[in-house]
Length: 103
Image 1 (cartoon, one colour):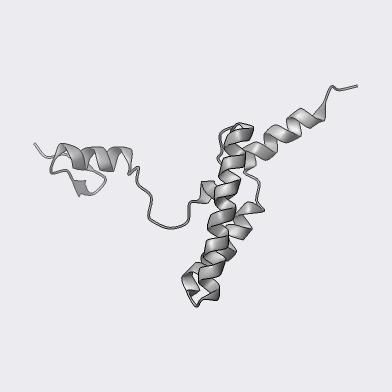
Image 2: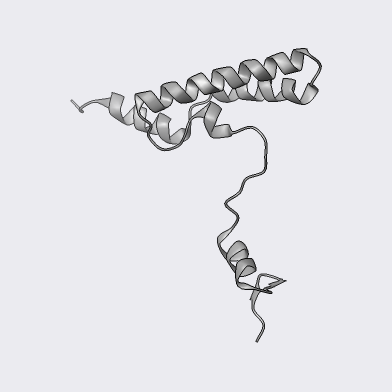
């Protein structure tokens, strides 16, 4: 008997799991959560450590960009833009907590 997911014929169990459940690996590149922040709550220490690492990496990317690495320069701009965003869930949680009691 043949097994299919979509139009893909499954050859083995690993292929079934990859097609059915997706891939856990992300392509290499900038770690969005490092600069934007995670969608889950984080402690003050975790946030401080993440922001320190993000600052160091962004500084390295800017330096590499100034030395002529165009990709690093674009990554530095993207990282800078990500640090200015607020994940939707964090923004929604903040709005609810600031609303206070109704009159």
